[in-house]
Length: 341
View 1 (cartoon, rainbow, N blue to C red):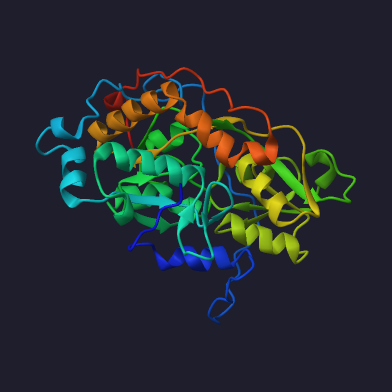
View 2 (cartoon, rainbow, N blue to C red; view 1 turned 90 degrees about the vertical axis):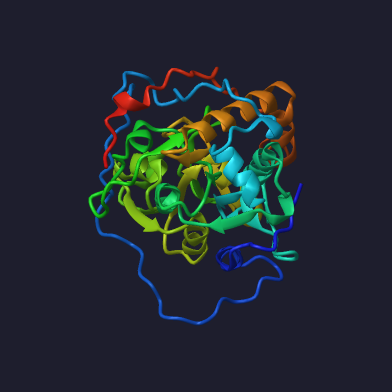
C-alpha cells in the first residue's frame, strides 16, 4: 500500500529524479560532484561468527508484547507511540523496494510497506510517517545520531554492522547498530547491456563497474579484477550506466530487477556474488525496539504478509515464490560483541 506522508524528505524527490522517470522534473542546477574513487574499497570479509561467537543473522529474542496498550513506560515503543509517528530511513530510487512515486511524491516499495507494518504494530498514524532518503553509506550513522528509529533499505546483515567495524580505506568505522531477524534472502549480481556477450564478472576484467558506497556488493566485485566506481546511490549508478560511463552495475538482484524495468536494454547476469539476508536496522541502544521488530516479523511471516509483499513487488519481475528465509536465531549476546565506541 502506498502511503502519503506530510513529512517526506525532499531528498526523496531529488533521488527519484536521478532516474529520469516520466514526469520527473530536472533537478536544480549545481556544481558537478565527482564521486569515483581510484581504488577499490577495502572491506574485510564478514567472518562466519561475530565477536560473541554467534553468526551474523543471530539477533535478540522476540519475546516482547506487540500490544500497544502494554508497552512499558519509558520503552522505545512507548516513546514512539507518544510521539505519534515512526521515523524511517529508506531508498528513494530503487524501484519496487524504496522509490518515490513521481506523481504523488510518496515513497513506495517492499521496504516501505514493511516499515508500514512496524508503524501499524506501534499504533501510530501511518500518514505521519517520516521517510528520509539516505545513501547506503549513512545507514548506521542516521541510527547512531537518533535521526531515525528504523532503517528499511535492503540492508545485508553482517557482523561488521553489529560490531561497528565496517569501514573502507577512505572512511572511518561506522557506528554499531542492531539488526532484526532476516526478512529476505538476496545476492549481488551484475547488470549489463542486453547485447553484451559477458556472462560472468570475469568477462569485465579491467572494466568500470558501478556500485554504491559502503555496499557489500561493491566490496565483493572490487576484488575480482574490475575497476570499481563508487556512487552515493543506486540511482546514480543507473545514470552512469545509461550515459556509458560504466560497463556494468553491481548490486543486489532485487535492485537490478527494478533497473531492467526502467531500462529494457539491460539484463542481469552471473552467479550470486555475496548471498545474504536483509534485516531491519535499529539503534544500538534500543534493544527493546529490536526485540519488538523481531516479534512483528514473526507475525508477518506466520500470517503470510511477507509472501504477499513478495507477490506484490517482486513476483511480477522475477516470478517464483518468496525467497527462503532462514529460521530466526535469537542467541545474540550484545555484551560480548565488544562494540567500537
